[in-house]
Length: 295
Length: 164
Image 1 (cartoon, rainbow over the protein chains, first blue to last red):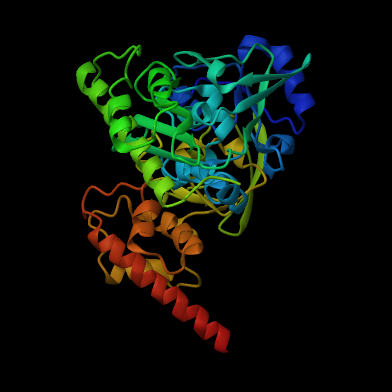
Image 2 (cartoon, each protein chain N blue to C red):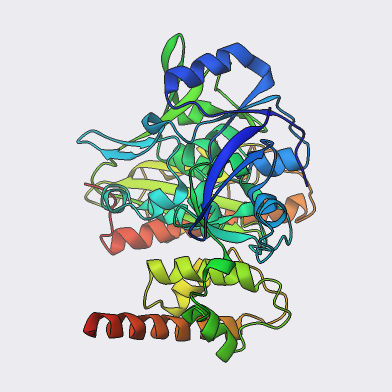
């Protein structure tokens, strides 16, 4: 399969990339790892006249762990996250998510920022940035803008990224003490996209009472979402299996779920509740094991 | 507009003028006539087109040749040296790690990365690292055996080199 013809640009600085984006506007498409974009171009679902390859811009790459925040450059690959010792120490759930994305070859090319800017409804990172309350740093010729994860996903393949902007980095706060986190997914057997994927981060007090719970769901709605009712239901109660099971029954509440080629809507609702319950129970088990995240 | 690109493939430098939409796999097969790399699904799932690009196993059906400009590529043709099979090729041969052979070039290139990352891989690591390569014949049983044997051969070879 051949994509439609296009002009290829490979800027080496962010400044140059933003200028190209400004010049070509809607006729341009930004490419990071290209592992969603190139297949879409081969199917001619997307036919950009100008392809702006972000691969040579060093400012978009790399992982930095500071005292207050963990910054991951948007063009950092899934494998770089999966294999990062710094991330394994500071926020190991990110390594866990990265290692179940697609397959090793795809993880060598695909990037965190590419996945988040594409916002595939079945991608893995979206559920996790929602659950970890990440910030997305965008740059345009007008300057920098920071978007909260909960506001990033707006519709099917639609994000808060504005015309002329490039997603440059994703920032995660260190999790508070007594916080455990987990990610579980049901992968599609061929593509390994999440038929359902659930990310959870829960903080308890000394007595085991839940003081903060964040649950992100991917694969079931048109974009990643918070399971708000589950989070509300857990807060203030003892974080324990019976409470988790009861809260998980609300996991699909308010989500738009339709029949598709894989599942009936009812099956998918059931899967959604089941995976929320499993992920929270894994989080609970990690608390029992004192397997906490971060500092 | 065509782009002039320079790529090192299996140690030899090549410079060619290519259209930006030319995929790396077609550059290898049709421009350089290195047809060992196969096109299977053409949708970045099956892994038959796996090569190493700057040390990383990638699916060459999902990379444009222009993206590999200045890069270093190894294909299955680059495994054997001076007429001697690579230990991974020997192991696939000895363990019968193939039936029809269509997936084998990509499978072996994925195994080169697997054994670089995990010289003594566990069964779990082998399975996890071969997630991106589909074989419709073997049921993977002998492929996994071949990986284990190849790992042993490479370690033994490195020990010999270390001694001499």
